[in-house]
Amino acid sequence: MIQSCVTISLVPQAKGGPFVFWGDLAGSCAKAAELGFDAVEIFAPSAEDLDARLLQQILAQGRLKLGAMGTGAGWVLRKLRLTDPDVATRTRAVEFISAIIDFAGSFGAPTIIGSMQGRFENDVTREQAIGWLREALDKLGSRAGAFGVPLLFEPLNRFETNLVNTVEDGLELVQSLTTKNVKLLCDVFHMNIEERSISAALRLGGKQVGHLHFVDSNRRPAGDGHVDFRAVAQALTDIGYSGYASAEALPIPDSESAARQTMSSFRKFFPADLVSSAATVSG
Ligand code: LER
Ligand code: MN
View (cartoon, rainbow, N blue to C red):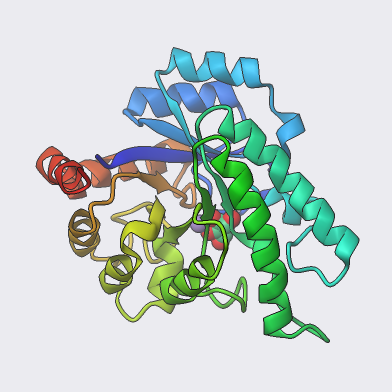
């Protein structure tokens, strides 16, 4: 069954980024619950900045789940990347993500690697960078496995990375790992830029699709751009996808309206019969 999720950023320095809610964890969760979301995806400055007991209480109050946690603050705030040429920086990047995996894992939630993948540049070749990335993903993927959750790896568009831009690139990477616990996060905004066909790419991803960033072509909430979400929903049903459709979108015109627009699209494109047939396919 496909479930709804919405992003909350707790990182003021990421201002301008594609997050629906900003700050005020309790208030944002209360609003997400009021609008009918099943879960929240949290983008925090670090694992240490979160209070697990408080989060537990807030989630319980709204009958919400933690859908996933992002790690991009490692890049935004600390300039850490898994493919940095400096080994000490790569090690700190792995430690930063490990702490988030442990925190999210204790809530039964996966962790996302997006911008922390970095890029290859200057004297570093793509092969070298991919080698470092594989090393890190093997460690981090098996760490997430201890909590019974996958690690989510997100292909990004060419303006954000030159390493992994498409589902095909992502599959090649995750299938080359020793761990089998890294799944793909398909972000419709990035897919709209990089894929020849969004639905064909989702079908190619198949069982390796572990999470979806549910957002439109212009990074506005789903339904406010030109993505054909009927085709997206059909592809997800065909592959038996049963994860989250998580709104990682700009808060346009404001957070509450963006969340409402997302929910209205979620109900339109993932109606109960489609959602339950997806559950049947996935067994
Ligand atoms: C960044 O563009 C993005 O889509 C995030 O989910 C990556 O951390
Ligand atoms: Mn994304």
